[in-house]
Image (cartoon, rainbow over the protein chains, first blue to last red):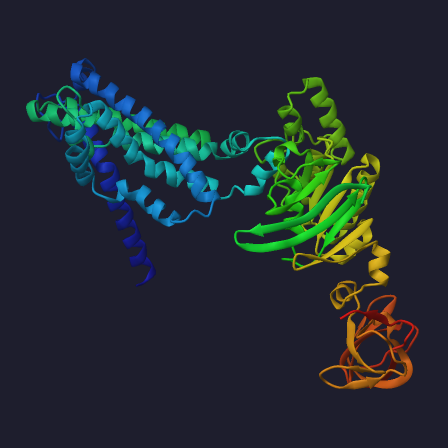
Length: 262
Length: 337
């Protein structure tokens, strides 16, 4: 291939990538601003009506709060389990460490539909746990792989002798962890939190199975809303959520160079 | 020993199921600078970790300053350790690195400040308070690690290969620095190295270790002049070690008549103990190099290669030519088998 055709191929690939990455986003933004009572693209007239309506739909407000709570507390729980797990996997030559790594990664490898169905059939139905608790457990499990992976990689360069030095200066093992290990993996923990938060917040298939009457996460609520109402407010809400994710990642990148960890 | 400050009695150290150090007995006096010397895998670092409390002995006991510390955890032993990698805390600046241990003791802020600044000054890092370890040179990091241990006023200060990560010039500088700090503070120091020059230059006494056992223990002068085994002799620069049969030295390649009959089964000569220029034997020069005060030769002899140093006044002999030499009785070091 000569230089100019290779250049052309590069531009085509770049163009296609951008089209498929940013295109849907633009379509959603514009569709949410369509001055029609139904979802339309290209928009017919422009209005902010649907963007404002989003904030008045009662079920959106409730499900937004549930999704937020799940994302925050599910991710915190995952970190509470994941940080010690990552530490143990890095520090000790545990028998079966590779198996543990694989098992921990299972929720991102196994399709969400299967995880959701399995949890519904074998956790929710037999034990009768509440829908909220089931959702919380499921989201924790789904975020755990990110917590372990991201924190592991930031712990990788941390030498064990740093902790031994802390112990010889008077630390207990636990103090050595909180005073020496944690400050040095802070960036990784925050990155894992953000990644986990976004994963949990956008989760659909597993939540689909576990949502019950009156208890729905925001994405599921949006699906339900669309089945009844076909106005552009769902598009408007999607656009707002996309902006929220963007803002989070932007702030994270600015604060701690998020992309170093992911 | 009654004057033992650190006493290891029948200490056995294991890694998993393998014995790294069997039944070690070692006494260290107060204020002494002692060196554990040996090749990698000889158990010197393992022994040091046991003194620090980072490794529990499988059997035996460790006493420090008259107290049995065998079961005392590392953070309650009051022992300092300067790691080979320095193990500084990257998220803290120099001041906070040094103050780390003092803060744990919840000392008043004024005392922490005073002792930390004094510690930094002792190692010549005055004014570097705000630097992060990553912004310091290797030598400065080394000093910082030293200060961090010293401000804790440890009973014993352990140093793991303290000079190995430094370049030659800094190494000399740190050597004198360590000796100065030791004289100033009077702290008992145990350092681990595989470099015999370092051990000879620094230590009050050297513990030469091999395969987890003490091969020989003595002052640098002692070890240098009177190694007792082939291993010790080799470590101390006796590069020509031969088996003795009657009045002959023997190798797999051949024999050489000595003209005297030693009682020991092995004899060793340093390169400068082999006399060259005159003597009953002939060797062909295999290699030669100029070393300032003398010239180094490798001679091909009936015994195989022999290393010999010639005075610089003697005319240089080219590779391939022959050189007369002798293995004199006066410079021969008898060794046990």
